[in-house]
Image (cartoon, rainbow, N blue to C red):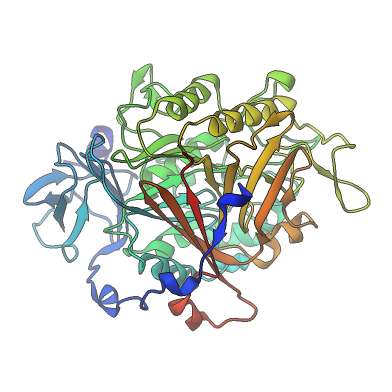
Length: 532
């Protein structure tokens, strides 16, 4: 068959510091680097209790489908570009809580890489004792634009993986190539440097697949993703939440242009990037099949783009959601997530039988840097301070109403820690929200975490581009256990039946060597106990 035929088929009291030595780990095992990647450039899997979904790219295009074997059962690959460089594999009907041996073979039957292991999650009705998650944000960026070198980002993630997480959540900004924002495009995708790096300019009125846009997208996105992850995550299920830059722009509003909600071209760019590079969300029996990005032409799709679930037995249920694809500009009735999504989130918080229900939005709760596309009305005054006295241009009051409804639902959960983990702010932070607007959350404060950025460039910190570091919004009352720290890092979260232990890691580009990454230990540890 020809390639085109394949394409057609295809709370303050809750935050208790613990000594970091308690969680000391040995440096990354050298055996990991000995794994033979062969013809595989990058490999990112995801999983639930009965399925695997893998996104893979190869050193050279393949003229016919490769095959993934899962414990000897073959799964034919489906091409996700038009050249045969990118493929996905979907293995279904698997047993829960089981480790499978996987291998990849080319059309000629030869091994494309060394075999490896990948495990399904526990049965949803089971009661596992422990879940460890790796949490991070903002791993994208092109080296030529002064983002942290891909080799350094890879090293940070490799150190994080040395703590052997069961899964990883990458919360937003997997690529940076802003095309229209008057604030950021001139130093990003709209710059002459960007055009020279990829050898052209995107045509917004053209399709992406099968046009020059596809080749330009690969040249822009590939250096930001493939070498950062490589094959290190082959045995760690990954969950990628999209934020503004993943739609190839910054969230900005000016008289000349308002970049969001995303237009058709932005949606296609986000969809194509996801299709080729990182997994969509697999089905979950408690998530409606018709949420935005999970239905095509009126039919439920088998995967979801923007709203997902990380379910680990009855121990943890993480609700993963992007605020970008469905945000509206409707003033007092405006929303970030549409009503069907808000209804799903509230239902799961009220009805889930999991010991822990965690919100993972792409926009953080609690802090603001005064930018437009946030939950909060805070804006930078002429005096250089955040204020509510000046109206933020184009900001929508309905966004804040939805924020308050969601935080109220989190705090109302019985016997659960109202925990929110997010990214976006290019910082590491931890706080406890006791009031939002007129809503009293003090009986069960919402704990908010900003997980730590992996790839931020020097001008990308809030204090650089916004001229102010992230601060608690004046709309709410918050106790900060970690005031936002503008350094690279990540978070490791351990869930057991009665508590969550959060371990925060940071690395200072200006004062620490790259080699220091290999022995990073938590600089802060917090224990959150479930309320009675």
